Amino acid sequence: MLVCHNPGEMKLLRLKPGHGEILLAEGDVEVPEEEQELIEAFRRELDAGMWAAVPTQSRDGRREAELVKSFDQVPRDADRVIFFPRAAGGASGQQGPTRPARPHGPTR
Image (cartoon, rainbow, N blue to C red):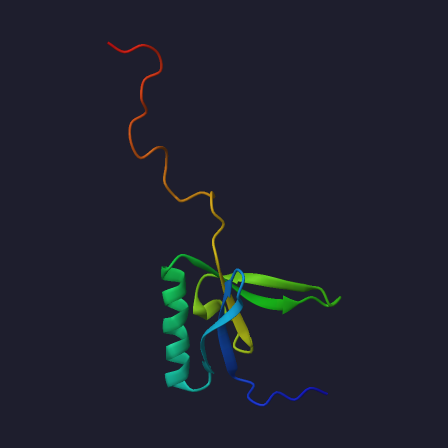
């Protein structure tokens, strides 16, 4: 039987290619000051354009992750939240080109 030393302990980690996981913050969600530090670190990562995911495990033992968009969506018993960069080349939220297209064909 696995007994957790501090069941409220949570780590915020960033995936960095070539380096693995980098610890951003850790604290006990049951201690208000530490929870506030976790919330602020979480917000900084989202503001920097990162995605956030909480690792989970299905009933058949398969490892998965659930994307979260706010700290409120993170389960209180989660032991970690992993941040990773958004994929390059995806939709940036902009609609259409940022400058007028040049006309096709001869110009005078």
